[in-house]
Structure formats: C-alpha cells, structure tokens
Length: 272
Image 1 (cartoon, one colour):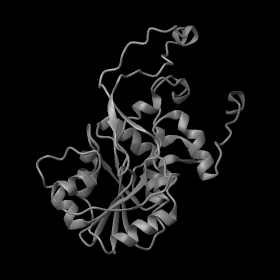
Image 2 (cartoon, helix red, strand yellow):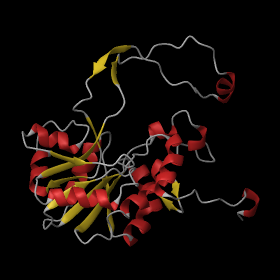
Image 3 (cartoon, rainbow, N blue to C red):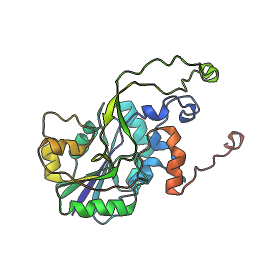
C-alpha cells in the first residue's frame, strides 16, 4: 500500500467558540480549535504526527480555509511546521467538508494506491487503531472505524423550544447564553445495529475518485459517497478514546486521554 492522507482543516470552529468566553483570544476574536495547546504542540500538529513517520504513508495533504484572507493567516501560522512534518497545504472548501476533500484529491500523487481521510480535530487516535484500519484496507476497498452506541438515542423536532425558566443573570451581564437549547422528543432510534463512525477512513484511490465524480456530493462522511455507488463499506472496531474535539469543554478530556497538559503561559508582565 502507498497511502495519501488527507486532513480537512477548513472548519470555522463555530461550535468550539459558541457560548464559551475561554475559547476566544485576548482580543475577543474566535479561536481555531486546531490551534489549541496539547502539551506544547497544536491540535493540528498532533494530528499530522499520527501519520508522518509511517512507512506506508507517502503523502499528507492538509486542506485549510477557503477564504483567501483566512487561508493566508492559516498558512502563516502553520506552513513552516507543516513543511517540517512533510505535509502539503491546499485551500479547502467554502462551506462543506467534501469540498475540502475534493480540493485535496486534485493533488494526490498518482502513485498512491489508497487515500485515507482523517479529521484534523481528532489527534488522540492510537497507532493500534490506525494499524487496524490500514491492515483492513489492504484487503477491502473501503474501510471505516466504528464504536457501538451505548446511550439511548432519541429523535427530536428540528426547532428548539423557548426555555421559560429563570434567566442566568451572570451570563446575561456577560452577554453569553449559558443554557443549551431545549427540544421536544419526536421518537426513539433503534441502537441495536447502530455504530458511531470515526476516522481515519481509508479507500482505494480509484474508488474514491469515482465516488467524488458523482453529481451529488452531500454526505456527512466520505463512506456515504461510496455507499451511494452501491459499493461495500467495511467497518472495523474503532476506539472510544478516539474523540473529535468539537466543543471547548472537551479539551480537558482530550488532554487527559493523551496524557498531556496545557503549556503554562508566562504572566503577562513577563512576556516582554
């Protein structure tokens, strides 16, 4: 196998910054979750390091923001480090993850037999899990990891209802809504044969190119495009600790899983 790894990194971290003042920088601007500190390295760097020393990985492609200014900022922050790690940087998608993957596919080396796609905000993936997925990928055209769903699943109405309870006065003063939305249950979802799907996902290169040649590319993951072709997708055992950083309050858990701490910053008056 000769694998090209695509890491979509064009997201705006909206949910990460939502209603969480700690996720804003010192100027109050939204902060990218990929820049968060994991033991002296960023989330993005930790993710890339999962692959850059593997003998079966020939190429790593990071798809950054679509907007020219945002991409320039992203490049200024990460390009030097990406280069040292052997990763290439391309402009990603405007609104959807599949747009980023499609942009990265354009520069996948023709000699690569497989393409693996991994979430940029999933840095806690173990080498054992990657081995398991890649080993299965040598014998199957499309392989994804999944873990059983242990919680009860409910379907809810799409629109939240108004919370008529007491107002959090402190949150109101700070201009933040500390209460999560409330929804009405519309039914139950059978979980007996349900799996929560993770990344990395690996595909034979030609199959993935054929999937991305379809007219309709809307899908929550790349395996969905393969399924739309009528091709078989194999699920191997994932890992419950292979979490994706989505909200700021997940950072302590992620650091605990990885066994790293946030690097202590110097007091403001000692920084200069």
